[in-house]
Each structure stands twice: as structure tokens, then as C-alpha cells.
Image 1 (tube, one colour):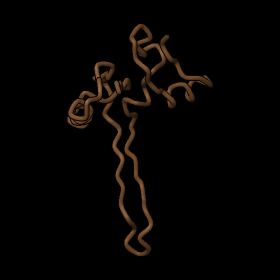
Image 2 (cartoon, helix red, strand yellow):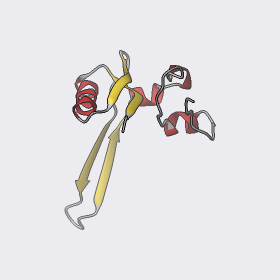
Image 3 (cartoon, one colour):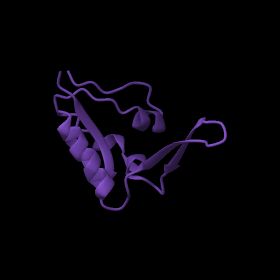
Length: 99
């Protein structure tokens, strides 16, 4: 199966680490954009010590993924991809699928 990933990350250590992980797992990341002005979003997961329930914390100030716009999607490619966040952000109710 061919899998591709199109999104935006910061041009920082975390963004490059995510890019490398995608490549190592056989994902085409040629559509991954690196933003010079924003950082890659971070998520931290932990378990609360008193009850063991999961806790999530996110760092976005703003993060590159929140700056990803529909105009940045490669609609000329032969790829199938999902961009839920972008389409929801701009009020779209469908995904783009090249044919």
C-alpha cells in the first residue's frame, strides 16, 4: 500500500524527527512542509499519580500545523491524503481525493 503524508511542521528538531520517522516507516513525506516561522506542535501524555488517569498537555504557540492552509495541498499529485483539520477549520465538509 502506498501512503503519503501532507502537512506542516516547524523547521526544528521535532519537525525533522517526525519527517525521519515517516520515512523510516515507508511513508512518502514529500508533501511535508517545513515552516520557518512556527514550531512543531508538541503533545505530552502522562498518568496522574493519584488516580492513574491519562492526562494530555499540548504546546502550540502557534504551531505550524495550525498555519497549514488548503492552498498548500498538492492537488496535482497522485496521492490520497486526509486533511481533516484544515477542512474543518475552513468549513469544508469533504476531503480532496485526486482521480
